[in-house]
Length: 262
Length: 221
Image 1 (cartoon, helix red, strand yellow):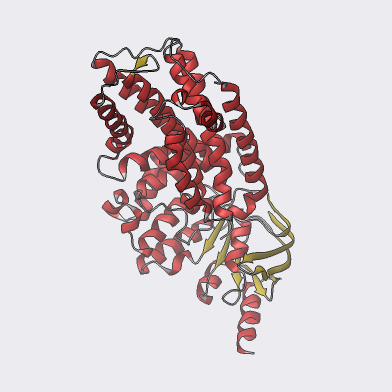
Image 2: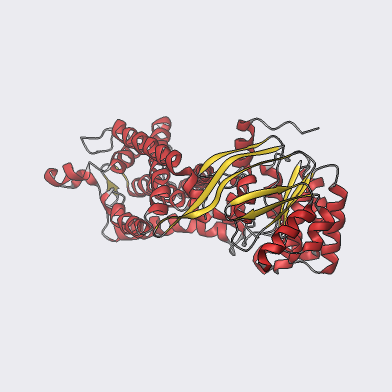
C-alpha cells in the first residue's frame, strides 16, 4: 500500500525549517565562538567610526546623536549587504543538498535571507541595548517607520541575492564584480558620511542608489527633526526591491533545471 | 510504479551540448520489484538513477513516480562536511517530514550506522566507508516504497556489506529496489529483473540472468 504523499506546500515548509536550522547551526557551531564574530563585525565598524567622529568632536549629525546616527545607518546597511552576499552564494554553497529532491535551489536563497534577517534583528537588539546602557536615547520616535525601512532594505538584499545567485552560476566572474561594488557602496550609501551634506549636483546621482533612501528613512524615523536628504523617497526603495525580486524569481524559474545539473 | 516515457538526457559541456547519454529510454518498473541496472562505465547508469530519484530532470520525455522514492544512496552527496553525522541525520529527517518522531529516527540511524562516537564528529573526518554506513542508515530510517542504490555496498567493510545485504533482503517484498552494481553476485543476490543500458538505450529483461549474459557478451565482443 503506497504511503500518501505530503502536500507540496508541506514539503516546502519542512524543507525550509530543516534548512534554516541547519544554516543557523552551521553559522554558530562550526567556528570557535562563531556567535561572537556575528556581533563583532558591526560592533567593530560602529566603534571605529565612533572613535573617528569623537576625535574630531562631532556630537550630533543632522541634529541627532552621532552614535544613533551611525548605528541606524550601519545595521540596516549590513542587513542589506549580508543578505545580498549570503543569498548570492546560497546555491553554490548548498550544492550537496540538491541530492535530495525536496531541496530546490530557490529554497536555499530564501532560507539564507530569512537567516540573515533573524540574525541582524538579534544583533540590532543587542547593540542598541548596549548603547542604551551607556545612557543614549535609543527609542525611535516612529518604531514602525524604522521597521518598514529596515524591511525594505532586507527586501532589496533578497531581490539582489535572488538575481545574482543565478547570475554568478551562469557567469562566475560576476562574483568578483559584486565584491568590488560592495566596498564603494558602503561609502556611497551614506553609512559614514551624511548624504545631505553633499552638494546637490553630486547628490542627484547618489540618490539613484535605493539604499540611501532606506538608510535616511531609518534615521528620520528615529528622530523626526533629523535633517534627512530633501529628496527622500521610500517608495523608490520598495520599487527597486520589487523589480529585483521579480527579476530574480523569473531567473530562478528559467534556470532552475540548470542549477541542479552537475 | 515508476514510468519512464521516451526519456532523453544530455549534459551541457564547455563546448555546447554533449552527446546523448540516454537516447529514448522507456520502461516501467512495477512496485516491489527489485531491478538491477547493468552497463559499461559511462553508459548512463548513475544519470538514470539521478533522473529516477528526481534530482535531475530529463532533457525531454517524462518520468512518473507514483510512490515514495529514496534519494540515490551511495555517492557521498547530501552530507555537509562541516556538520556532524547527527546534524546531517536530523536535516534529512526534517526534509522528509519526520519532525514529530525525530528522536526515534535518529536513534535508529545511530544504531544502524555503528560508527560509534564519530556520529557526533564532523563528516569531513569520516572515511568513505563511514559515509556509506551513515548514508545507508539514513535511507533505511524512512519507509520508502522504492530504494535507489548506487554501489552503496562497494565501499564498506565485510561486516557492513553483510549488514547491508541483510537489510536489503529484509526489504524484499516490502519495497522495491533499483540498484547499480558492478558485482554480478550482488545483482544476482538481490535483483529479479534487469535493465541493460547500452548505447543510450535501455533494454528490459524479466530475468537478471539474461541482462547479465547480454551485458557480459557485449564486453567480450
